[in-house]
Amino acid sequence: MDVLTEAFRWLNDPLNWTGRQGVLALTRTHLEISAVAVAIALVVALPVGLWLGHRGRGATVGVVVANTTRALPTLALLTLLAATGWFGNTATALACAVFAVPPILANAVTGVGGVEPDVRDAARGLGMSGARVLWTVEVPLAMPLIAAGIRTGAVQVLATVPLAALVGGTSLGTVVVSGFGTQRYGKALAGGILVAGLCLLVEALLAAAERAVTPPGLRRRERAAAADSRTGRRRPRRAPVAATARPGSNGSAPPP
Amino acid sequence: MPSGPALAAATDNPWFSWDYLERNGADVLRYTQQHASLTVQAVLVALVVALPLAALAHARPRLAGPVLATTGVLYTIPSLALFAVLAPATGIGRTTVLIGLVVYALLVLVRNVLVGLQGVDPAVRDAARGMGYGRLRMLLGVELPQAVPAIVTGLRLATVSTVALVTVGVVVGYGGLGQLMFRGFRSGYHAEVMTATVLCLVLALVADLALALLGRLLTPWRRTSRTRRRTPRTPRQASAAPHEEAAWTS
Image 1 (tube, helix red, strand yellow):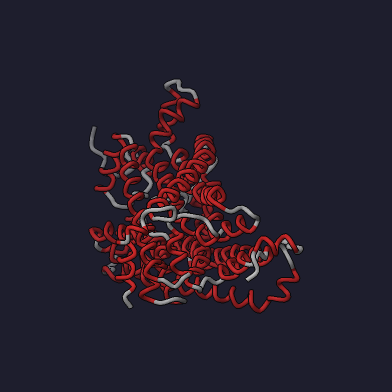
Image 2 (cartoon, chains in turn red, orange):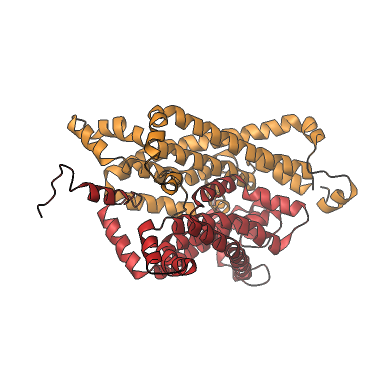
């Protein structure tokens, strides 16, 4: 049917954009809830993640936390909160924060924990204290991963907030849910396009921000690594072993 | 339709109720089956699509970027929006949910299979080439088996998140246990919501364990060599197994 035309007519109607339940107001609420959720998640996850990574014992914790929370359906948490009487935007923000914590936490732990031990040793040898090692060495080196975690968490929140519309929250998801509820699929489609567009836009913005906060040195190295091999995951740690083994082995070591 | 809060206040409304399960056993079982079959189908279809895609991206490295980027963009679109976009084309019901689930499982699988294929030890590849393996035989006989651990990790991730995602299918009226959850919420029936939630978690856990077991069975060579291989590493390196997806990178 002409769902597409219906969707575009809905999007073209200025009355749908303004007002208390208009797209603009809904977008604003959507973004506000998301911002609050991400802020809560940051406050909870970042210190814990940095500390665990710094102590070097968090890698397994990160994996376990990451994998268990994936299993909990977002809708389940939202419904549980709503069924206990927690309606509205605060509850939505809280529930979404729960889902933003794992990526931020896991990436902070793996990022800081994965800093080359030699680099850490060198920083210690320069007489840096634990806190200074963390702030001036480990965090900048782990920045790409930490930023990626925050970006993933933020986009996930942005994608989760619409679900709250099912249990009575207000966000852009309201358009979709009410469209489905009243069998006006054009409206649902319009809402879907709006939500998807918002997510892709924010994702692009955050990707740009991520690049901006990555220290220039790392950026250059990353590009070199990308040109070198696209894996990005191959551990460079084997190299030192080979380097020390070379003089004694029957390899083609250059004559001194 | 009875209004939720009023009903909840009037009657005893426990979170866990054996009584509920006994009386609605058939219903619960039906939705659980629906949930499980949707998950299995979605992950299988996604795997069938992901393997050739990843193999292509592996064989033609120039395609790796676009393939990952496309699946990444699809992955960014929220499930609710995707269902809303799909529904006019595919109708209300099973097909829409299935397509959505496949799309989301796809990114995880493609990325993991690709990482597995690219992570094959170059020495192994050299040895195979030296034995006269061609492109295709190398892929099927050497690289794919070597990538099994990564593929299984991807399958586990995809399955667990698919189990959680099926619930969103309520918007198109086909959400497995989500249906139960939503109904319980609408009528303010705590036991129904809680039962569905717990069953979701159990389903994810069971699927995860089954796949982990399958991974062990498929890679008998890793069981014996693992202990030997781990000893020279430092504890920290050993704990972060290369195939375990500890970090989210998108």
